[in-house]
Amino acid sequence: MFWNEVYKGTPPWDLDRPQPAFQAVIQSGEIRPGRALDIGCGRGENAIMLAINGCDVTGIDLAENAISDAKKKAIERHVNVNFIVGNVLHVDWLFREEEFDVVIDSGLFHVMKDEERPVFTRQVHKVLREGGKYFMLCFSDKEPGEYELPRRVSKAEIELIFSPLFDITYIKDVIFDSLLNPSHRKAYLLSATKSDLNSAVSSPHGECLL
Image (cartoon, rainbow, N blue to C red; front, side, top):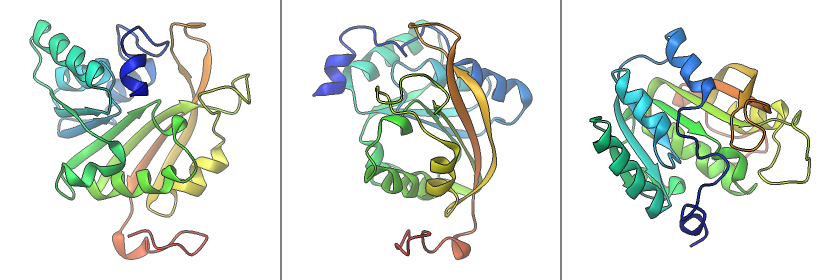
C-alpha cells in the first residue's frame, strides 16, 4: 500500500513538531478544549499538540506504519491520543454523527482526486457537531510547481468544494512547513464552520450532498 511505503521513511511533511499554522490557531483561541479529530494525522504531531492543549483527540490515517509510530510517540510523551487506522473517505463508519467539535486537516485535502473531494467534504460535515469547526492546511496556487504533487489549490477551488456545506470564516495565506525548503512553502489555511443541514442540500452543480 502506497502510504505505508511512504512512511517506511521520512516524507517531507513529517516534521518532529506541529505545523506553525495550527500552533497559531491554538494560540489565538480558535481551537478550544473539546473533542477533536486530526484527519490524515500521519505520525501525530498535530494531534499530540491538540491533546496537550486540552482536547480529547482522535487521529486517523490510512498508513498503519504512521499510526504505529504515532502511538509510540504519544506514549513516550505521556499524552493520551486515540490513534486509529482508517479510510478518511469513510469516517462515518468509525464515528457517530456530530461526534467532534473540531476537525483539522494538515496536507490531506490537497492529495485527493477530484472525485474524492466532495465525498471527503460530506464525511467531515457528518462527524462535526452543529457549529463545529474545520481547519484545513493545503499548498496554495502561489507555491511554485503548478504540475507537481501535491496539487496546488486555489481559493476558488476551496470555496467551490466547501461552501455548500460550510460557512467559510477565512482562507488565509500561511506557510506549510516541510523538510524541503523549510518555512517557505506557500499555503492556505481554511477556517470553516459546519452549516445548517437544512441550507446545505445541494451543490452548485445540483448534486445531492446529504
